[in-house]
Length: 427
Picture 1 (cartoon, rainbow, N blue to C red):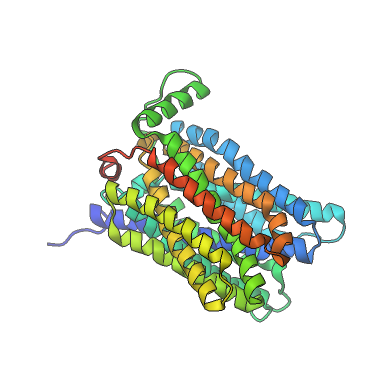
Picture 2: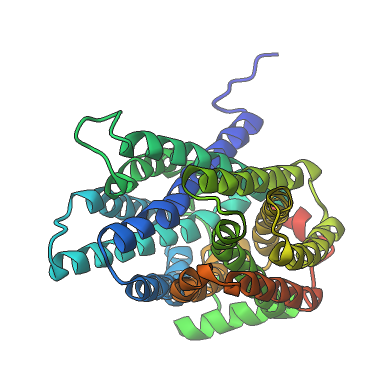
């Protein structure tokens, strides 16, 4: 019997998920381009002090952390998630595109470049928070953690493709007269906005004006407190976010110290170091892909988080003391595998801690924890970079391993409802 693809719920759901995955594909291209190219260009090529750029990046991350929950609750209650998403994608793309064409001479010009980069980072991160609020809609009828993991698996592929395109562009062989790291964000921004367009134009991902929002009584702060109390009573959300802070800090810190440690103990540099980092990216995608195929239930989600965090911490301890290239590659591979499995699992699991009509608020809080912990790493980055010549990078990896293990007892206090994933999937 013929089924019209335009009205078939299964086909429509598949198209909605593909549109949701598409953003993840483009998002990580920018996520990779910022530390690999933008940071190096501004600090090494333009001569901006590392501590200045580190603090500026931290402030940008903390700004999204502080404002994200408030913008999220407004987007939920006014049913304007799509408007916020579209605007933040557009503003971020324009700011990233113009970076390479701004004047570069003089202190004032450098200040403009740094401020523009930080504003671009703010709106880029805001688009990610609002995008995650559509996870329940995208996964309707499917396992939420599996959908989250599939999106993250695609994202690592997108990051690798984005880096390859960037390398081709900045080499000067693709566009005559355009070369150097200053233009790296141009292809990244174009790739990002192309990948975001399917989501913007997929109506099923977004709220409708007719959708009911069951608003608690009181002012904005009172409503947020009531919603937080609900999630805390049902799922102990505070312990979840505390565990996530430890997890994200450990992963970001390990990623920060990893290239410094590899360069120090093996002597790799340039393209060889980039390839070593590429192995981490590849196996992060493998880790996310494995979780996606598992379709984990509540019990398996808890096991993935608890066992994964333990292995991540133990691997960090081994990583800090090995010096031979094969063992370094093995530890880097395991770091990618564990972190790739953990990140989407936690993201998907958190989708069930708040009501479906307040998902932008939920991921505003989730993003706040993510960006504050990431901002801490950005603030410490100049210290880590200066430590590359000594064994301080090794001690930095040890510290991140300890932090990962701290996350284990924190997550153990989190109460994952017996029907959490099933209920979320049926929204």
